Length: 103
Image (tube, rainbow, N blue to C red):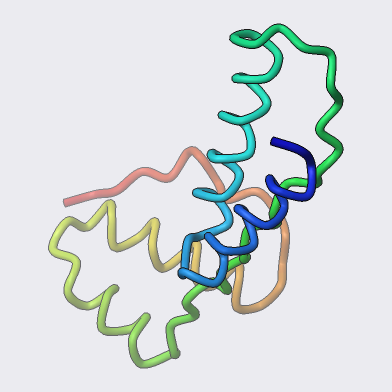
């Protein structure tokens, strides 16, 4: 098996819908096989596939307010409110740690 066969194999896996992580797993298994089982010094100079980066889900203002209103615990509600307000106003100051909640 030569480098071109390995590339063709990985390309076929990509066409079959295998994820980048799965293709990298195949590539690393082949490298392990050559290095540790066959004990050859053949260099397999194939780059790993890049994983797709998922964009974060951003909640709307209404959704955030619903989450805060649905929270029953006062302490959790306060922390969520503070975290949202700090992020929403782009003020990057530490959240006060010594807040006393009177019930």
